[in-house]
Structures are given as C-alpha cells and as structure tokens.
Length: 403
Image 1 (cartoon, rainbow, N blue to C red):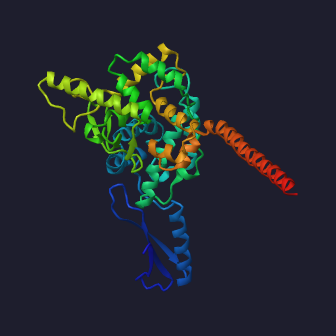
Image 2: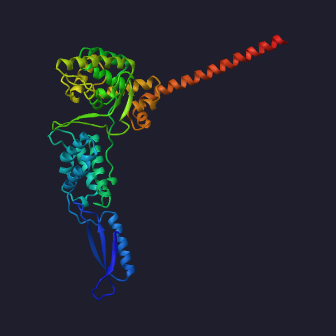
Image 3: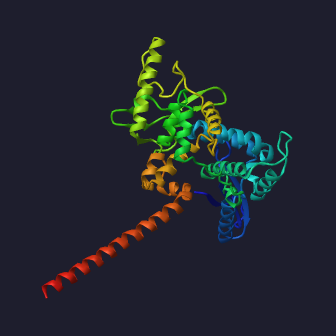
C-alpha cells in the first residue's frame, strides 16, 4: 500500500492524517511522510490522490543524497556485476571526469531535465579539461546520456526516485563513424606484407572470420576443430587499465557462436599450430587445449593495442584505405555480401543479435546488390520469354509439316 488515512485522536472529527510511502533512500531504507488534512473523509481521500500523483511525478522525495553519491552506489551495486569489464571501466571514467564535476552536487531527487539538457549544451561547446580547444564530441555526450539514463532507470525501478528525468532530455545525435573496408586486392597486399611476421595468423584469421579483436585474442585451441574446419567463440579477453587481464564469456548469447572456416584458413591454422607446438617444446612445454591460439611464445596473451598499432602501420605501407583493425571485420562482411551470401548467414558469422543489425550496418553494400538482383531478374524473364517464343515457333513448324 502506497498511502493510508487515519483520523486524528485529538477530539476533532475533521482532522485526518495521511501517510505516504516514499521511495527508499540511498541505503535502501523505507521512508514515509505525513500530512494533516481538515475536512471530511472525502477531502482526505482527494488529498491522498493528489499526493500520490505528486509522488509519481517525483515531487515527494525528502532524500538529499547527491547524484555523485548515488552514481558511486550504482556503479558498485549494478554496473560492476552486470556489465563487461571494459564497459564498467568506461562508466567509471565518464562519471568521474564528466558527470560528477557537472551534476554531482545536485541532490538526486532534485535533478531535473533542464539540469541535464543544459549540461549537454555546455559540454558540447565548452573547452576541455586539459585546456585545449573544443568541447566533447556528440558521441561522447551520447554515451554519457545512455549511462545516466540507465542509472536513473535503476533508481526508478528500486523506488529511489519517482521518475526517470533523463527520459525528458534530448541527447545530441551520435555521428556514426564512417566505415572503411578493403577490397580483395587490398587484403592480399596486406597479408603478403605481414607473411613473415607473427601478426600474419591474426590478420589472416580476422579477415577470414570477421571475429572481433577481443574474440580473436581470447580464442583457445580447445575451441578450434581443424578436422571439421570450425571454431567456437566462447571467450573474450580484456586488458584493464589497472593491469588486470580478464577472460570472460562474450557479452551476449548471439556472440557465443560457431564459425565455419574456409579451407585456406584451416590450412593456415594447422601450420600455425605446428609452429606453436615447436616453440612450446623449445621452452620445455606442451601445447594444451587451454592455450591461446594467438599469444607470445611463452603463452602470455597479446595486448589488443599492440595488434591495432601493427595493423595501422602495415595498412599504411600497403595503401589500404583504413587504419582500424576493426575494419577487417567490416571487410569480411562486405566481401561476403557482395558475393551474394545471404545476410542471415553473415549475421550469424558476425554474432549479431539479428539480421536487421547486419542490414543496417552494411546498407552501403545493398545498392549494388539490388542493381545486380534487378539485372538477374530481368535476365531470368528475358530467358523465359525467348524460350517461350522458340517453343511457339517450333510448334508452328510442326503443325505446318502435319498439314
């Protein structure tokens, strides 16, 4: 029950006390607030309805817990156990560097949409903390909004506040980073340039499977079946700023997937495994199923940034239009779609949660595919028309001979 009424025991028949159950405070403790009403029971009931309406609008919350304190609590109680390590690390950074300095002193229950909207405007225009010109990018402010929205939704769900004020705020649009892919000739130039380096197996596997960087570097030999030419994505690797290395399951069930290997990749991985086995023996060790497919000779994991920097270097050397390692994933998908592979299959290989994401991400490929489809459709109808005309002529000649 959210509120109740009882008659005061002071001898007055027109005195009523209304008790409202308020949202829990930052420590999860129950809070109540009482009001006195004069009049009949109907007056008290009307007042109760009004108070409950105000409660739903977030106007009846006595807690003075500042937003900064609540966000720290949210990070501890929700974000850390429920998000990926790198995501949690990014949340901490956004809160510490941006939200706390700008809005942290405002009591959580006093936070209003105009506070947030005004901050977004200042963040986009103002100078940076390091003294350099230019404010935050629209993408960064958009990330801040998503974080704040999730944190306030949690507060609403647990009755800490009456409503999520971030719902009434319009964040800036995050400009999508332009996707750049390599063609088949560019890919071959890249692989030729790194053929004699230890980056060759990583780049080769990336472009032939479309795996994410964290999935590649977290891949173990126990998840690679060279006889069946397939691998299973079950782990991702994350390097934290505090030096920790965390290997965990992918963020979604769709990312945990099986990926078929092209014959060329299966052959390359077999050769790579043989070389890795020899390197292990030189150190007096045996190659185990739990060992990483891509690692340093002693089995320690390769840092993701090292791979990205190496890719940028070699991409520039061979004249690729991209310097982002992640664009090898886009290259894999684009080449498949251009070959007429069904988007559903591409979506499954990439670990997308649905084919709609694949179609939206790679819509730039579709116009050319549509032109080709229209051309093929016309060719099919034309062939059918020609075949029908041939059959008609043949039938006429047959009838003429009979006559």
